[in-house]
Length: 144
Image (cartoon, rainbow, N blue to C red):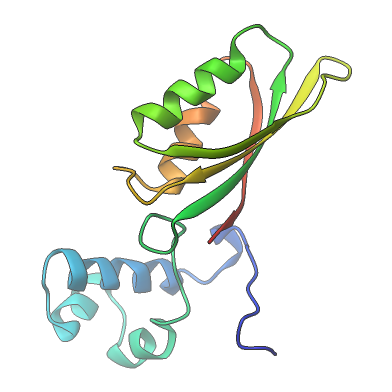
C-alpha cells in the first residue's frame, strides 16, 4: 500500500472504536485532557488510540481546507441560490461550481468549497444542505 492511499467509507461499516478514537483526540485537543484521561473517558485503551490516532479523521476544517460536494437536485427554481446561501451562512467560500443541464427533472451540481474559515464541520454543512427543499442527495467526494 502506498503511504498516500485513502478511502472514503461510511462509518456504519467501521468498528465502533474508530469513533472513540476521534472523540479521544477531540478531548485532548479541545478540552486539554491527558491522553490517559481522554482514553478512559471515551472507553478505549491507550494502545488502541496510539495505533490509529494518525490514520482516522473526520472530514472537517481541521483535516483540510477544500471540500468537493456533488449534489443531485430536483429541477426547481432557486435551488442553487438556496445552496449558496447555506454555504455563505457557514462561512464557506465557493471555489468553483459546475451545474449540468437538468435531465428528467434532476440536476447535478458539483461545488468546490474553501472550508478553512467555516464555523461548522464539512459533515454538518452536508446535513444542512440535505434539509433544503429540492435536494435529492448530497455527497462529499473529497476533502483536501
